[in-house]
Length: 234
Image 1 (spheres, rainbow, N blue to C red):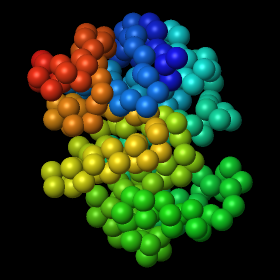
Image 2: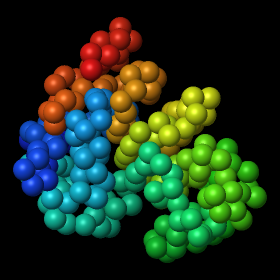
Image 3: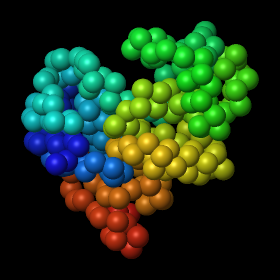
Image 4: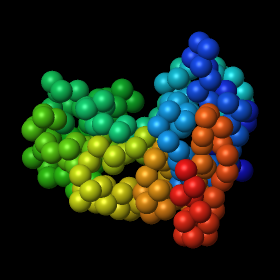
């Protein structure tokens, strides 16, 4: 059974239809990507699956649980679905140390040995332990994104949503972050839904990719099609 099943998803903002009748499924353990130009609806779709965009129509099933429009994620669903944003500033509080930011989700869920888990999380993403005492502005963009990834992984989610996770970074840092994400996925057996407009990133990361235009999924490419470059049709 698919980890995520989306059927006839529609999202509107007033007179504007951002996502129109989108349907797809994501298998457990795969990296599934949404590719398309800015404004095609892919980030809106991601926000629905993250529980951030609560007004929508259609049918969505995540890990065997049917989502309901207008409802906040709760319980295991909230823990098992995490998101990494394009800009790490969006998820890192500027006035909190990295240690406090990483400890927050662990405290919410009543975890123990928090300092040890924070140190382990930083180690996993290749950030020096002393970074825990620093603030976001004292880190480079690549370090901030690594910390944002560490935060998303602390609760051991099954589904990680990635919204243009490297597009705000220098080219040299992009490859490091993408390779880190691939390694962590293998280590923890996660499933990824990646949003990108970069065909090279999609080819490097994905098992399958869906091309979106004007709020509609136009075509799904398998690994073989991406190796041939067929996903570069946008």
